Image 1 (cartoon, rainbow, N blue to C red):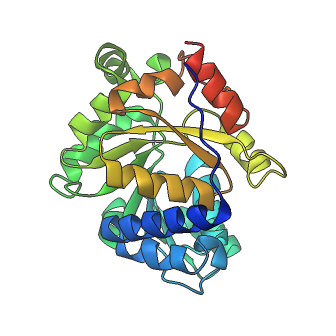
Image 2: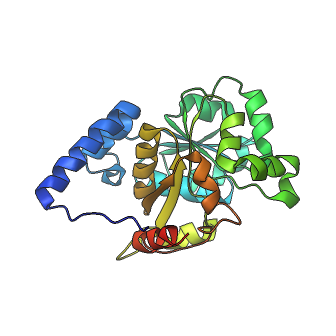
Length: 255
């Protein structure tokens, strides 16, 4: 059945917001401080969260750029960091470029936006580095491009498969249900913001993801645990379903 939310009076909403900020501060200290100052949209008046982008193509560049504009420092990574000079130059002093190892070391939160078949190599080259890291996973497994690992994701679930390769990471699936052009167009939409489905098993990591979805100009909808992430991956019923939170939840309830 569709999920509905009870009406909340303004005073109680402020109390709930304060509680959420406290829990976020425990998960990622910088994000809590930033939220106390009005969210990352306060544009640097608080203590922003450091984000490392692994895969700085269209999705990584678009979402990472939205976080920079909301006040977060972002390190965009590539095997060839010099190729990112134009991107970081256009985004200003909060944007930096480096290697994947640099992004992991720099970050409080990682944003994964590589082709799915890069996961085994990322796992091997950065063994142990993922442990305890919150990773927002925007990858999609495409059979024609990704080969055997796409078959594995199809069999076992895309979120579960990501968690297998990024051993110890606190994985949240997010920002994969529509393309970069849609995110570039739809962020901070007037009226009801576009809903972004997310899924994960770690409650604190989910709260961090929810805040970062809002900071990028969208509204999060928690679909369920990591095993439910196939619902908004390619072929799932929520993939490319662009609309408000109410519309997203109505579609979830209709499944």
